[in-house]
Length: 204
Length: 112
Image (cartoon, rainbow over all chains, first blue to last red; front, side, top):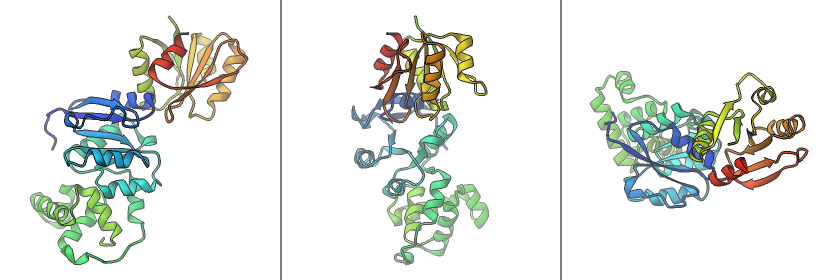
């Protein structure tokens, strides 16, 4: 659940119309902290909770650098679902992603809410792409228990904590604990990253 | 004060354009209706400037159509992806020039 503390959003996009439009989509608890084009002026990380940035070759490493201290959440706006950078971004710990063409007030706010709640959110097309990637092998499979792999598989289908709890006949608390253990063990920042990594390693 | 008609844009772009024009004190007199041709809106509203979506493939043709039917009306086609716009000044037979797109530059192009 999200508490009602204001969440400060910094929006970076090099097109002024699209940037202002994303800003105009915001509603409480989200507040506009500032905006920039190609990360100029540099986002003020100290007074930003979520950085919305443009996913490109320059934008991704710059955004990851800004988020290096671990507090800033990242949401990527991607040009297309076939973008290899999207996979890279999720694996590097970007919390949410939204396709530029899919952006509207509903999808944008949903992506921000998911990011704020720590769930992550991916365009369906991207999730499908992640799942269809060639499997690298079973290296590291021994690190996760069957129970953890089961939860990861359901996460990869986009199920919520509650749905997973119902499917596996666990309590929600147990599912959250399992997810937490998985994140720690895989050294991931969030669920989306864990699913991406597990998929790439062929664990699920 | 210039009277501006906004053509069809995606939701985010339309909100952004509104925000941008509001911030520059520019009045939007109408927005194109989804199931009606822009040229018929233009002929009814008679704006001073029409703003079109440069990313829409049909926009350049529409701009030329407006330029030939309503030569006194200026058309500005703005991209919502790249920071560029294309300006069709009035009385120039559909000639146009490209410019960088920023809030002040668009305001200047609209009001000059």
